[in-house]
Image 1 (tube, one colour):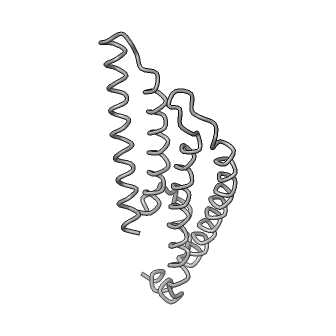
Image 2 (tube, rainbow, N blue to C red):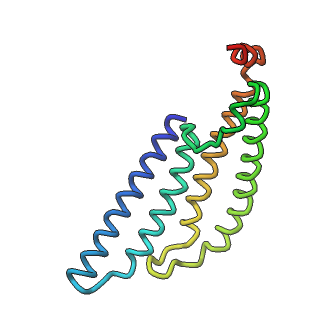
Length: 160
């Protein structure tokens, strides 16, 4: 998982750097040279999409995603564990369905180029697959760890 986190961090950094370069180039060509480039807006959008899905995957791998715990933290530890397991499994099902429908979409868009960049639109949807797979792996690890943790440890936490 550490290697995957580093890989996603690199992709996010590269996407952010690409966005900065594209927006800077767009500003220079539009306002200084008075001849705007066409491809920078589309490239910036692609970088933003990659940054979004890679960031979601990385935050899930790190366990940094946003959680609303107002109700769950008031439940006994056993119920918290069961509820967490159910939510993780439901999220995994959602991600599996998302992946299931993304592959045919990528295949359908493989020969359709983006208007300005002129490369396949399926490359944009690759970010969805990478982000979803990383989230699926992170949730799978959590589910595995939930089953690995003995129930007696939950009872010990509940008493403190």
